[in-house]
Length: 372
Image (cartoon, rainbow, N blue to C red; front, side, top):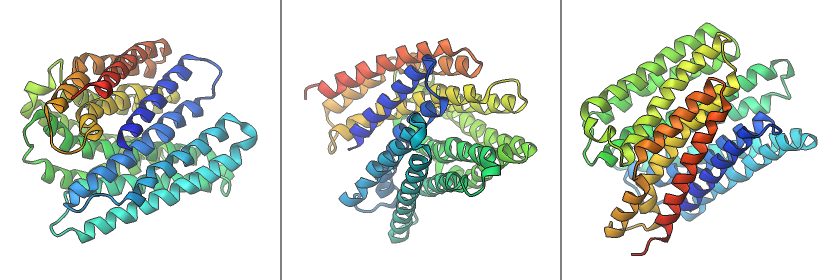
């Protein structure tokens, strides 16, 4: 299922870019196609893969693998509601309710796995729990909109920030601290300690940004500063300890590092948007291009060979990973440049991201068809 989720996410991100370059589709369709239909099921699948590793427990039960499928169905209901105005209320409420149920089941499963672990779980498990709880709050905000119509705009902003910085951002930062050392081929001895100390700051930062954007803007600035501190701290570690792999043209590490830079840039753009100097939707588009695309393509470059052919690593895995990561640094730079351009209001920059994504799709196709 994991390779299928990767392909689905890439297709949704490509469709979002195509819609962005068009002029007739409502922006919420672009946003939900990326975040809900593409990224949410992929993150669920990645969590189902990593949690047994983090808890040193048995592989995920087959029944639990239906959660990404249910998340995808919920997301399609929401997107159909935005695409067909007559279906908006039913689609958004039904999709949010189904997604909330799925999220709560996933959270309960993670808690159960953590409690059953013989040794203390890896700290990254708690980042995943925090991320899915942020998503749960974001979905509650959607369900509260019909009940609290006077606060619909505020609840929409709360939902948006809990999704992007909470669910996606917390998942990404937690995973990157484990995944980049793996891509580099050597451990980060302080990753566990850093994950434990940075999680409270990150959660507080996300909640401050989300609540502040909705109701009290100075609080959002304080939360952004906390998140910038966490991101810069991690970036400093990477530049100090993994400089030789981060600044290469090839490999997954450059793409993962540029994804972190993209997140940093979008946090800055978010503060500029709060001053009403930039359109907030452009920052969302920048988030998709400058952060999500280098993140997803970089992580997929490292993990997809293992997901296509689980088990013992062979020469095929090495060749497939080399194919997926060839010139990944240039590819990720194209994504980041496209995202910065879109965030600044120049939507034509998305063409650069589209070309880079077509490039990666070709590399994926070659990896899928590569013989043993």
